[in-house]
Image (cartoon, rainbow, N blue to C red):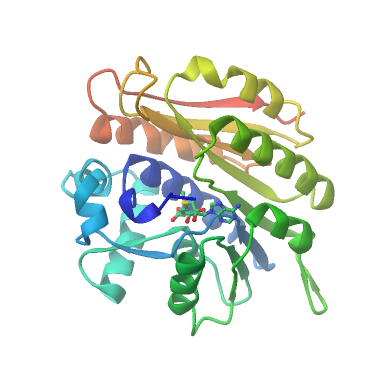
Length: 285
Ligand code: SAM
């Protein structure tokens, strides 16, 4: 495995993923009952945008960099920017939070987080970030395999009725990754039907994703939503033109929150021909 998220941290794909993640966390935290979160592909938890890896690609300049330099944003985007600022207050001006850091930031004392990371070095860094946070368990293992062990979530006497699973794989082998992710979603829905599931996916040409959407629409979720941000037109198969999230069992009104967020994000982060969409793949029956 060659993928290292340090080269991509804070890019446009992280922005949409992390905006959606925080919106889901906030919706779940509207009720006091405990929340369980699984991050199957967690990364190292904390990134340095001044580090050599991030500077080499400069991807963050077109993501969080552009957003921070822009005028005031709508509420769901402001919420994300405040989380990034909180990370910087704690870890320095060039810090960027990974998904497990954002989960730990957004969730509460009564909530629990399982963060899985297969790469030994990344997993070790993740353990260091959360050494003093007893809510977070770091699993240095395959995230798909961990789902079988972790769902339905139960710790001691506590059974978690509510929570979320984020699946954010590197897509090094594109077609296989979609197969693994869809199989994991199907199995996990059987074990924990009420969970909110989020799968991030890259977009080169949208047309090529039709088989994925067809298969995703047959998953046994109550409802499924797709939210996509294209920063380029999807006319080149050679680069990532945008990305999206499939959200199964989305919280109430997540679609409205994401519509409010994605329109200005496309304006700020997009080049000519940028676009966005929030559509139901399967509406609640
Ligand atoms: N979710 C992170 C975030 O938003 O900050 C970024 C994760 S990055 C896109 C994908 C991560 O998955 C990499 O750190 C990679 O080492 C790890 N990885 C790859 N295959 C994995 C697997 N089967 N199980 C767990 N982690 C895996």
